[in-house]
Length: 434
Image 1 (tube, helix red, strand yellow):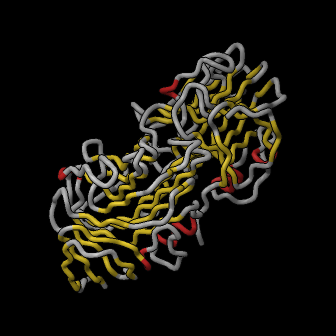
Image 2: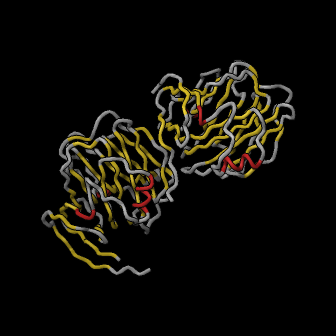
Image 3: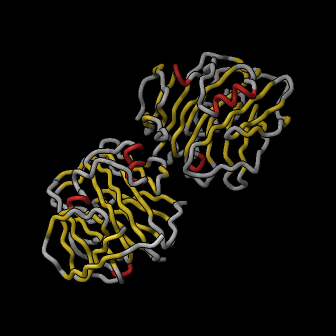
């Protein structure tokens, strides 16, 4: 593809409002002066969606968007941390890090960031791929006269620029909204389809001022136990802790046959528990655990484990996992994103018995407790079902394909008896756009 570029060199031009559709700002060299100032009337932001596109070959730290107030130099900052290969968002001076983004040089990238002051949750969408939601600054809005800069990172309100954090490359299509866009609206932006322009910053009617030399180019918390239908919803665990979890309540005192299915989404690189069932006699009576060191999925049954390697447990995407076990044969089998493992021998001859404590988000080292922050889950979970019999391969495939199936008769996501403890949220599940 050939791009035809029309150039206009601007040096410290007056403020203007222009339709920038089909155009971009070019920052041709590193400086601690060249920048674009975006003017907005808002004095308070309690919700934000920010979307922008950029193209660079920088191999160092650089700022992609900088909003400062008189009280917070990083009121809303999007920043690439080259050392750790992480895209960072700073909101009211608090930082959230996102790793494993495929931030390649010399190509366009579309980035959207959402934040809600009430929940304190931030989420990034990188080239159409959503991150997990993480906890950042909650309870207070971004307030005061706002200085928005493209091309530099503000260490003070409207200044304090560092040449080693300046942006070199091209930027386009900057929009900001004072509400959270839906996943489909964000996908429309990423795909360059029709969408509602930003009502805070609108690239199609941009109020801006160029400073120094720049080019404009034309391009071609705990709640009481409840029973609820959680269809199309999910639990969000926004940050690692040794307290936040969901307790699932069930009346069963014995399980001799089990099928467990669940979906999860995370970017964790370390050990973490996906499902933990403990009794007073066995902490790991039925545990699904990711071993980050050996890259293995490990089911534990009756305190005994087997390991499954070679599983394509990619970050930042949904995975569907089913596990079956029969106490008579002692055989366990896992299904990972529709692919069955071999059957392995684990624990036979005895059932899971006693008062069962089930937790999502933490791994129990004692009955209902003993949580380790380094084994906690961070991300999203949904569609947890358990049956007291072995599902057929066709029934498991229906679960994997999100088709109609008989809900679990031990744990039923469509009538879930649960209790949230500390910082876990219930949100609409992220669905694909059609």
